[in-house]
Image (tube, rainbow, N blue to C red; front, side):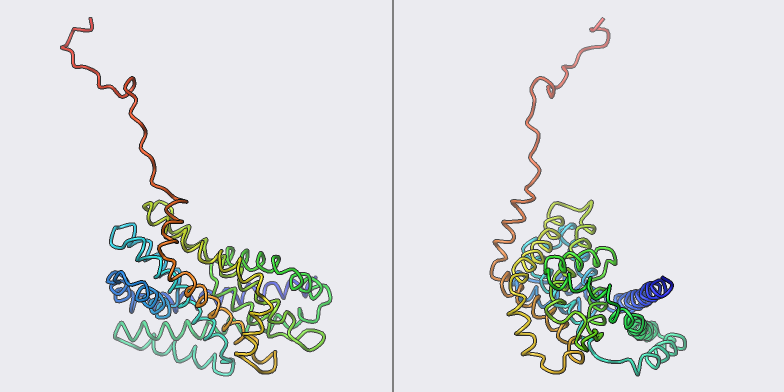
Length: 345
């Protein structure tokens, strides 16, 4: 019992360090480049391809799909951008957020403390604001990997625990259960990057047989759930916004839900493609395989939906129609005729 408590606290502590590092890095980058990214997004033309590229670049630079999504919803709510322009940006944001998983797949364990130290020195000694923000971003980047290493260290005993491995076997055998687990993880943590990082680290742990404790086939459904869980952020950002802003959030949900429903039936072939793209010993490459699966999933869904932006617009318009005006009631809405004072008496 004490061992399980130590593992749980280690996971929570590592996750806290990861999330703090992620937020510090993302916040610093937004402070340094946020206005520029807002200008790029606001200047997007009606060309959906440019919209996808703008969303991907903004998210890759800011390291936060939530920031791009919230900005886009804000633009639509303010009338600076139309619904048809916003949807491709949301698609691009889904692609841009996969950069985080690709970065995490690099094995930087030997350099983590050096990165933390360099970032701390820069942000402590720099006089110029942009350099100081850059140092904060590097410091956050180092903390991000320090959190990953902490989680990886406490996960090792779990990989050989028979009770835990039996539970994982149940998840691996039922893809829909894996999707549910990934969705709930992201809804609770409010960061798909964090849950995917946990998934990458966990999948790299050897099981009793020496292979990955979960394998690529077991990781993909959880990955799909991680993508689905990000919809909650868009929905929360749309609360109290205009009708079109709510439609942008709904389009984000349709994009991820349709991808989840499609790929959950293609796990075998999809895993085969990813394994062919990223060959090598399973434990050494599975973190990169999960990152590539994340990227390929979002790129594929963007290629599917990009020619169908008009259909997406019609769908969200049908699901969230304009509020009908209340018909005028001549008995109740009739204006009271003017009468001189004392006439009623």
